Image (cartoon, rainbow, N blue to C red; front, side, top):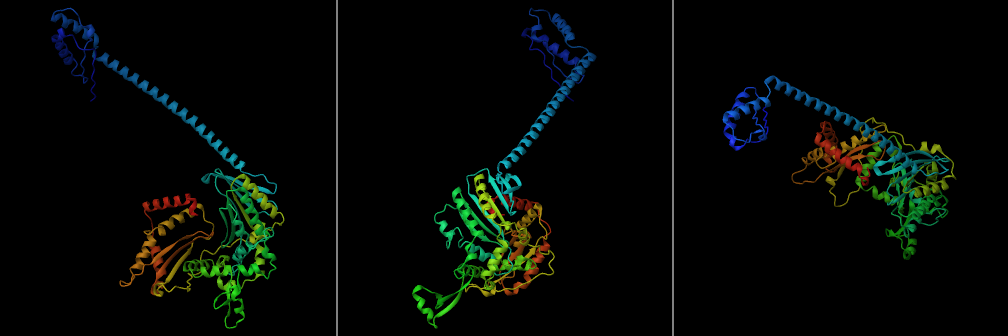
Length: 560
């Protein structure tokens, strides 16, 4: 029951206090049974100022009470009218408020659409402002890249159909980059792409020096100037914050790629023998010093040894068990494609390489049509790169067959059987041969191009399985193997692995180092059992993995 308290007027004068009590009693007794309790007091201004008898005061106040308080039915009627009026006022206020909200939403929505259109127009205008007008190129594609606050434009050279990509960042206070990528799929294990990469840096028509890159580094402002030979392409990259310096490196790289001296090497194949392999005389197993040249004619001291930059580099790589595991796994997984070959060369096969093989490989692959060019920097840097590449590319004919030749085929996803190979590697004297066995298990993950969602899913799975020391697959395998260790001779076992995203066909590998010979055969079934036991992940694990993967993708230095 709702209780209302009414108070009308102020206190009665002191000389009428006795009569006031009688007035209060009559009011309360008269209105005590209707469920609404009230204490009604007449305003003090209505009280008489001269003394009167009690009866007279009571009479006057009774008439005042009759005047102030209507009867029961009239009071209810007034209360209902007031209540209805309040309802109408509230309803009207609600209608007005709803109308104001609707108008606000419509207005702000129109402004949002207008701002969105302006933003889209701004992005398009920004992308348009990043386009360099050049008569030798067509614009194939242009788009903003909000993640790195830059604009991308893809050009296509009209004569050779070579692709030229420019990225113009909003922040120009950073390194400008010029790069060339040549598709160089290996045809065997002789290392022709690797040898050729080194040979191209040994001088060109415009820079006929033995090592122009080394000489240029002495007085350059370059922050990066390197070449890299990968399994299906060779990269030549230069970076600097000085525009003139970048122009010089553009000229240096383009001249080395398209007019190298190795094709005109008339000095007894000096470049090839230096970069690939050769036979050098030695004295007592060491290199020949000038003062020891006379000893070469002594049949008891003179010996020969194989030498060469590429050969020596690959010898060092093929003594590293980690490198061996990776290369053997790739060869087993991609046995039906050209990815089975080592583009950098297998030491035993490098000896079969001849200069004519290097020349033929160059003529097949090093054409502008088979080259992709990249510039990251200002519009001036993009203009310089477009001009410099066109100056060399316009002297070549378009060879679209080179693009088809450089495409790698897909390995069949359903391998006929699980391939198992055993190879030896050189160990040091400090290693214990009893616990020097390394094992790797690899899976091929896809036989068609992965979607962005599938790529993200595999990165999350990689973290969940192998990302940390407590990841389920790594921890389970570690505990299983350590439980098999001898109590008297405990040798720690290392479990590594994860995704290999080098190619379009991704791989997932698990490698175990430090096994005994009796643990080698059971390890594959143990890994398979652990994989079969993993059926789901908790929400906490998934959230943690998603956060780590997101931060990794946002971090440009991660290389992922």
